[in-house]
Length: 118
Image (tube, rainbow, N blue to C red; front, side, top):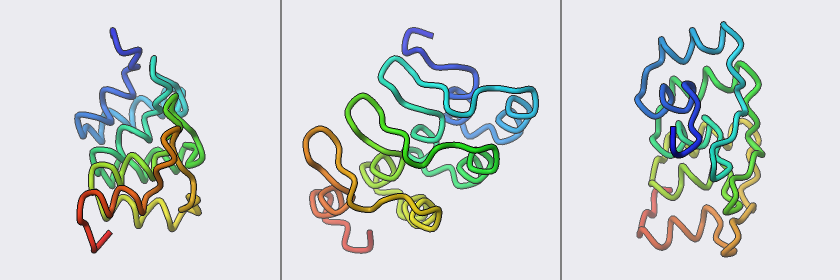
C-alpha cells in the first residue's frame, strides 16, 4: 500500500493471527520493511498483539530491527503503553537501553505517559 506495508504488516496490524500464520507458512518475509522502516514486529508490538508477536518471533523476526526513526519493536510497544508486549520482548532479549533518533528509550516513554507499571 502507500505506506509500503506488505500483507504481513496488514495482518499484524489487524490482529489477524490466522492470516499471519498462513502468510508466514507461505514464505512471507518476516522482517520486511515499510516505507518508514517498520517491520511487522514493530506493528504487532505497537498494537500489543501478543499472539502475533509470538508467531513472528517463531519465524525469526528480528527484535533488534530499527525503523527509520531508530525505534525498535520494544520502543514501539512502550510508545503505545503495551506493557505485556514490552515484557514479552524483554524476555526475548530486546535491549532496554536502545533509543530512537530523538534519544528516547523505553523509560522515556514510560515517564512521558506516567505509566509507572511499564
